[in-house]
Amino acid sequence: MTSETLSNDLTQHEAPAPRTGRKKRAARLAGIGLAVIAAVAGGAYYLRSRSYVSTDNAFLEGSVIQVSPRIGGQVLRVAVEDNQHVNRGDLIAEIDPRDYEARAAEARARLADVSARAEGAQSNLQLTSVVTGAVMTQANAAVDGAREQVQILEARATSDAAAIRGAEAAMGQAEAQRSAAESEARRAADDAARYRALHAKDEVSQQQLDRAETQANAAASAQEAARQAVEGAKAHLAQAQAAQTSTQAGLRQAGMQVAQAQGRVSEAGAGPQQIQARRADVAAMRAQIEQARAALQQAELALSYTKIYASESGYITRKSVEPGIFVQPGQALLALVPDRLWVVANFKETQLELMRPGQPVTLKVDAYPQLELKGHVESFQSGTGARFSLLPAENATGNYVKVIQRVPVKIVLDEPPPAGYRIGPGMSVTPEVKVR
Image (cartoon, rainbow, N blue to C red):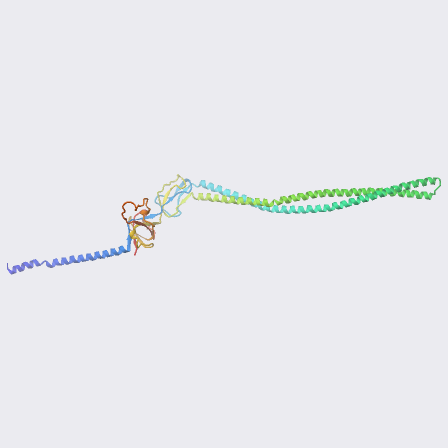
């Protein structure tokens, strides 16, 4: 082989060397690029893992309100259907109200009746107060008048007694004068008779006879006057005695009037007790009014319970009520799931070091991968989930294997989910908490 041939062979073997070198450089550059990308991705992941904490052990939670009637009765109509959205205050169902309307009307009539009787008791109290005062005043006036009349009659009785004594004295004097006049009349008559006998014998003069007869006539007249004076004294005495009898009768009657007036005063003295009794009646009627008013409120409240309204805005679920069925208080008719939702995320206890209430959270719903919700950490459960389970672990028995525990964390949504997404309790979510 000549040198020329050898040179041609070397040239043929060395000709592909530049292409192979370029491939190697490209491969090295690609490796370096991949290493840089991996380093950047790893650094980004590391930084993100230090700033965010996430778990897939999280679920949506919400209240489930069991709707039950507070009274019994036949369902008149049902205004909702399963899975229907209702607003707070919307009518859900109505129970036949006729029985409760009748009870409310009866309670209303009872209240009106008791109120009327209470007004009557109040009027009786006022009338008793007025009448008692008037009767007491009248009775006291009657007692004073009767006592004054007694005093007048007692004074008159004293005067009558004095008049009787004076009449008796005058009568005694008149009788004495009559006796003297009778004696004088008999003497004068005897003298006149003797003078007439002597005049017949002419032993005395006519003048002496006339004087004796004149004296006899004067004595007879004096005797008659004395007799009339005695009769007048008797009449005056009888009049004084009659006046005394009348006065004593009036005095007895006045005494009876005093006793009667005092009895009326005693009766009027019972007026305060009667007023107190009327006040007790008024108080009792007021108590009955309160009782009737409470019964009316209870009846109206029961009537209002015939209409069942939504206590929260949310969705109707598990409806078991239909028109025509008879329901009892406390019977479950349906469940209402309110629109207000939250998330319970069971983070590992090692993830809680930097987690604090108020930190922002991004939530992804498994049912809607494209949906992203915003929320924030509200609170932490005081204890792990295992501690509150039905059968808590007994770590003091048997062989112990340390297991990282999970702590429920409550995450509250900052705003409700969009209307087009049906999201409810129990659905899985993935929360991501920004801790740095």
